[in-house]
Image (cartoon, rainbow, N blue to C red; front, side, top):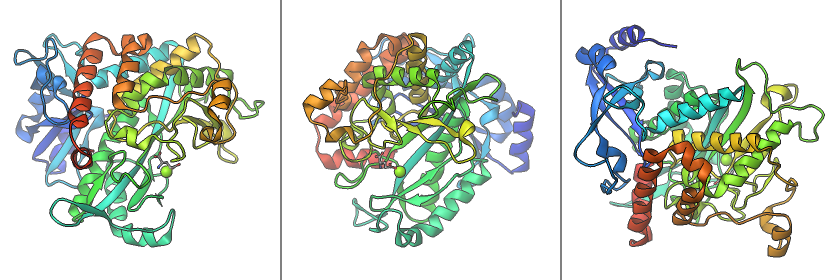
Length: 451
Ligand code: GLU
Ligand code: MG
């Protein structure tokens, strides 16, 4: 925990000149404004002013008509001292994640980070604290001509050839993450050409979402220093494996001492509450997807047989199920049993994705929903009739369909609240319209460089 005084001291000791006050917007783009070190103390008290219109801006910088989000009106970006990091990849720079506050100092209804904080508070009302880890895959690319990019390796899945190709940049990425106190759990080259994966360790939900922002920033910036483009777009190369950002989560008591998902006598070591939580996530999955796999490009990734999931199914260590019950580690089962949402990618806003996941799960717990039978095979291998008999559904296959499902989902809409849900739907629907009218090259170019 850091307070304002400690932030000022740390920034001065590190010789910082500019401090980024960042937020992740409805287009899921990371944006912000910067304070100079000389005005940092004041800015940490007053925030930095931002036009309300920014939450009506899509990922193409096209401003959408959203009531109350035009040229008139202002909010304040209030940086959270706890999120302070000195940036290892930018000269004399530091960054903090900011909440959006109204001029009367309340969390703004359209603030994604405040939404996640509300969902964390609702979890606490149930006696829960949520731990989460985002497991990102990303593509390392090199310019190939003026506008096109080629993967830095064509190595095989987990192959040592790919490790060699990426060793220098991966080492620098890990060092940069470590300097921001983001601990790495493992590393592997993935199936796709130039595709690599760096799972980071779990943390309390708000910190996990903040870490996801630092991760996105770090991977892209360090790759840039190596003359490479790192992209976390869901499907940068349509013929290759997509980039997931699987969300692992576990539900603990409020003190964070007991993993409430764990039940030693269950065949999958999962508690009854855990089953309710899964059932809630599956029940809301069609609308939840609009938050966890939110971009136009996301739906190129979510296809059967690509290990990304495509159906509303769950299963123990089933990597084609939308929700996988991850088996615990030998000797550490009670702490490590966790759930994984595969239907999630790094083009999401982590505050909205994690907040939506919590809202869906808590609804399952409140209604004591049950998730049905576990799937022990790839659900894509059943016939349509078998899937129907097992209650497995193909979930939305486009951004537009997911957004329609979100709008119909009363639980998720109520959790988001009117300002956030209206602005989010408007922004994301405008992106669907924009990309529908253009070709694949336009789609890839914009997703490649924004995420
Ligand atoms: N690349 C796969 C995805 O799109 C995930 C592969 C795996 O790690 O299981 O989610
Ligand atoms: Mg993977």
